[in-house]
Length: 330
Image (tube, rainbow, N blue to C red):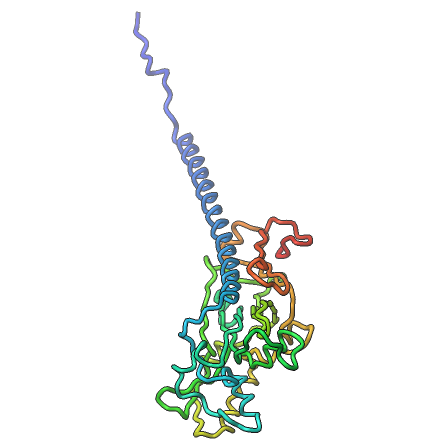
C-alpha cells in the first residue's frame, strides 16, 4: 500500500490573503496611532487652558499680595510717577517737577510717593498667543482716608494719576526722554499653540484690570473691550530732546495720548466696555491648533464681573451645557 504524504493536506497563505492580513494590521495600527494622537491633542489643549486660567489666578494673587522687587522703572516721585502724572504736573499752575527725575535709583516703588495698585492684563497686542501684564502705578495712598472727589474706585485711580506708561530719561543725556512702562511688565505665552477668542470666534482684543482701591485696598476687576497698543508705541518711540522745555514734554505727552495707549483715557464713568473700564463678566474662549482634531467646541475661561480674588476665575470645559453657568464658547 502506498504511503500518503500528510504534508499535501497542509495549505499555505496565498499572496492575496497575506496582503489582506497586512492591510488590516496596517489599518489597525493607523487607528491606534490616531487614537493616541487624538488623546495627546485633547490633553495638550486642556493643559493649555488650565495653565492659562492658573496664570490669571496668579495675577490676582500678585495684586492681593503685592511685593515690590525694587527692580521697576519708576523714574519720578509723587504726582510724577506716570505719563498721566507727568501731563498733570505740566498742566498745573506751578509747573514744578517738569523734568524727569535724573536719579531713578531713588525712585523705585517703596522709596518714593508712587504705589503699585494692580495689574493690567492685555490680550491681542502683538499676536494672538502673547499676553502682556503691566503694573498699574499711581501716586501713593495710605489705604485709610477717602480720596476727595472720588465716588468709585475708578475715580480714585484717576485722581492718583494711575497709568502703565511713563517717560524715562536717557541715562547718558538728561534732556532726552523715552517712552517706557512705568514699572515692570511680564509676558505670558499660551501653551501648545493656543490663543484666546471671544464667544463669536474672533481674536480676543481686550484689557482686564485687576486693581486695589487706593482708599481701602479692596480688590476690583474691570474690563475694557479694547487692546491698548502699549508695546507698539514703546517699540516705535525714539528718544526725544527736551532741552529743559516743558512745552516739548507736553507735546510728547499729547502725542502719546492721541494714540490712546495709556489707561487714563478710560478711567472714567461709563457703562460701555469699548470706551471705559467697567464691571463685566468675561469669557475667554481658548482655541488651539489641536482643537480641530479633538473638539467641536472650545474651552471657556470665565472671569466673573468685579472679581475680588482668584475664585473669580472659572474653567468651563467644552462639554458643559451652555445654559446659565455653562460653556458659552460653542
